Length: 506
Ligand code: ATP
Image (tube, rainbow, N blue to C red; front, side):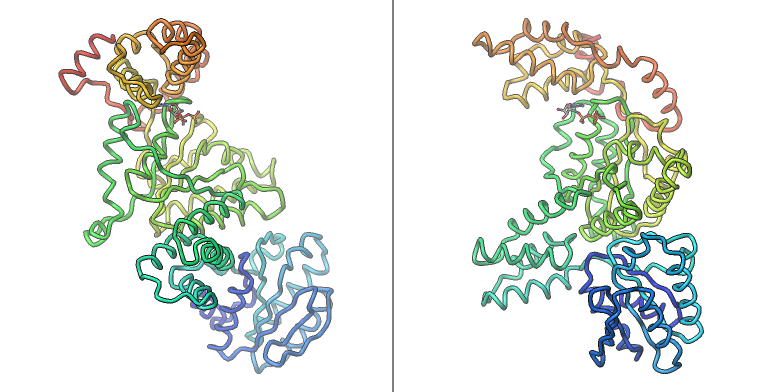
């Protein structure tokens, strides 16, 4: 941030905003920028009042209006130039006091004339329309590996731990990426307490817990591989061919990092499974984003939430960012403006810009069941590298899914006639095939035996596949996909054995 901040201050930007939960680190960087430029730094908070950081002079003024008056006096002088950080002013802006808003506007005008600056610092910001164009956001990234290294060294020093192997140190730092300085400090300290040293597994576990607690992104262990997916041959091939695209050699070859993939299709056909397998195929950490949580309760929170998600993903990058049922989060943007004051539209717009412009290798895998809820801009070329449509599995794919499902539940697929099973469950999704097998296992267990064709066929007969209930929606989805999205599965048999199976199954 320091470089960008210094540039803005040098250029005479009067109103800036730094949005981060890391107040201490942000203030240290603001202080460093002021030192570089020879500006005088002051900080205001309702608890401390206005503090001249150089002279440690405190002017007790809990009321922001009073503080703005004092700041106006400071800004009246030409030299030195003053920079005032106001902490958590959002809490006062939430009250929508017209006088406060007017005073800030007046102050920014005076600041502009004298080369001074006001910096709003806090973990969220939702400016009233009157101030929106007066304040410029300064990017504040999560700490990088070098900054986390300083934190780790501090912890190791105070615990009197020496001679940490560079590989151990590096893996702990990699695992801490995506955390704030304080969160990383806590994770390192916990590792020291638990293991008397530094252990990347403890740091990784703490990061997973911390991100989950924050409620927006979750670290998911990528245990699924592409071999765990039945069918979807073209999609798997596409992913396999891009698996090396995040490597150093791909970078020096000049390959841009792939942006992402949108997988559209019928519920239960393996879209989420593919998202998980993508991370494993690429050898990258997997983050799951709950779009519904981005649209949080308090005003201004949604924008801050999205920014925080982007910061986390970029800090951990290269990584896979999986957004399940993306339409649920963004559907409000089609009608918003009226329903939610335009929040969905704004957040959606910011997300699209990020998708388009991102330079960090955060590969987005978004899944959607209902494309009618997605705004058309979202589907425009350039956002994702590719869009795939996942249809109901055909006979060959169903047989492959049976093979996988049976093995997943600890049985040998060769003990079953999976071609016959595939024939018996036309229009079933992968999720329904698995549910049938689990049902059959329950029935067989209750009778003290292993599941066989009888139990499976009975369970099949009891199941009404979703496709039969949502026939119209599936037809509409197929029509939508034609010419827009690539088929995820090839419908032709590829090997003699497959041909035989297809012929049999059909
Ligand atoms: P939704 O849109 O409802 O989230 P989805 O398309 O993402 O559905 P998944 O969650 O990936 O479907 O599938 C649910 C479960 O069904 C998987 O965890 C897996 O056990 C099984 N399954 C679905 N499709 C397949 C497949 N092609 N191969 C193997 N298993 C599958």
